[in-house]
Amino acid sequence: MSDRDIWIFGYGSLVWRPGFDSEHQEIARLSDYARSFCMWSVHYRGTHENKGLVLALDAQEGVHCDGVAFRVSGAQAPEVLEYLRARELVSAAYLEVQCDVELACGAVVNAYTYVIDPDHDQYAAGLDLDEQAQIISRGHGTGGPNTEYLFNVASHLKDWGIADAELETLADKTRALMGD
Figure 1 (cartoon, one colour):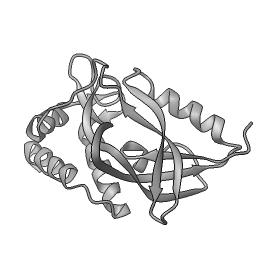
Figure 2 (figure 1 turned 90 degrees about the vertical axis):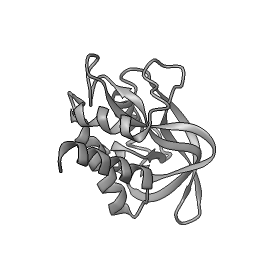
Figure 3 (figure 1 turned 120 degrees about the horizontal axis):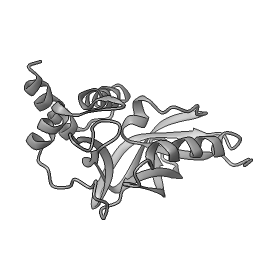
């Protein structure tokens, strides 16, 4: 058992459904990564026959991703990391990395996060927002409809005061396809 607290950086489903307890949450910024629907989902939000899309952090120099940093007590750290690895590394399309993130208060902490492996066959880079909306509107997996994932992330980022114009545009395009 560790006595050192750890930090987890969430940018997608962890923002609205972390699945673990934390001592503190704070808006944080990760540099040189973009939040992007660049990962095919063949488990949680799609199937091998009808793929969905989920968010991943895609390395891009000069950009940043705003999300939420969760501080987890050292006593809970091993259990939380085991949970996250089972959840996030189900198909090895994500890589677990530790990166420095800047908290809203100005402090910099080293946090665990999950980034896309650009060499994995689930990497779905280069899809425009219209293509993404089409895929998301049809996707459904063991975790439920792909639209639920998109709309929950967009809603909860807004609740945190985190602006993501591309995500909002994607949500609007997806709603239009659904007739909402």
